[in-house]
Image (cartoon, rainbow, N blue to C red; front, side, top):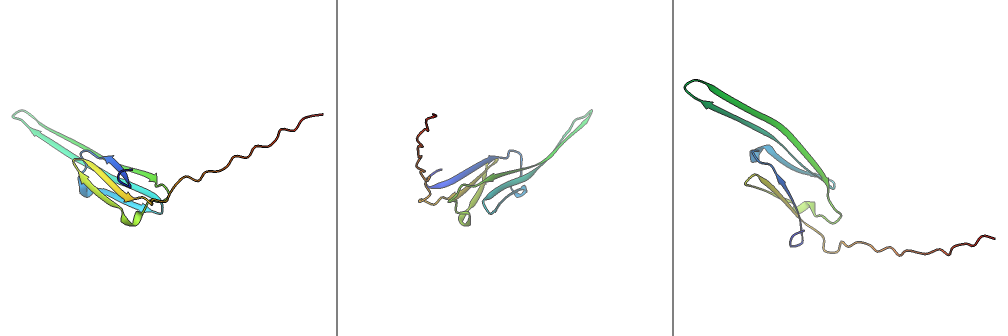
Length: 106
């Protein structure tokens, strides 16, 4: 929580922002993407090529009171930051604990 907003951050180094997808269905937040990286080094005697590919997907259940209608997602320096306002009235409900008298055996 930050300034009344729920904040979720995900490190996605090496992933192009256009290959990151953020979605919400009901109270489930999904972050998924795909890393596509190719490197080539040319020398007088050799050529070296490296390629790495991989996809990822993370899902998390949002807490009650998260306003998914006003969700925002920003990408900066290999990190996705997702924010959404939280209802101010969401509090834990206290449940009274009732004590039963112990029955004595005869």
